[in-house]
Length: 232
Image (cartoon, rainbow, N blue to C red):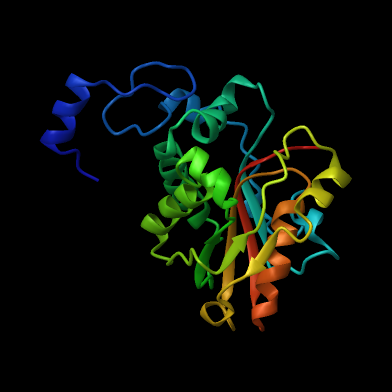
């Protein structure tokens, strides 16, 4: 995409910084610089979206078509610190930029083939008011901008927020999100292939709980995509 004169002026007045290393971004770079991008711990799950380590989390518990994450995520690791900035430090634009990056890369492996609609994992209303945005929605916006796949935001809602999943174990995570979601508009996804988008997948508990509501719409196919995947 050509860089506009206006964008160049903005960069001169208010230089953008890489969300990982803090260095000034060059023209054409978004969110993270080229060097940090090259060093992201990519999973390459999109090359084997049915039987990779992340996809296996959903076996038995939720029938899925495919699953992938852009990179391995480890809290505190320098190369993935931008996820914390996106979620907790008021930088929703990072999610949009990374969504676009994922869309470009995974389109090469036809990961989005046949998908009809994108559904971001919702936040509880209180949590979203506190944060001001849903980071999964921002990732979905970036994906949609590149792939052209529409977003269905109001399909499923989250009832309550019972605390962050970050410090919880596998079974605690599952209990924390059990019955947390409810289907609002099944008609909009009935008979469609849905891409469920989350920011980070660890045990898959959140995506499973959300996906179990989506399949109530009837004749729904589900695939899962996240920015990060945490090895347990």
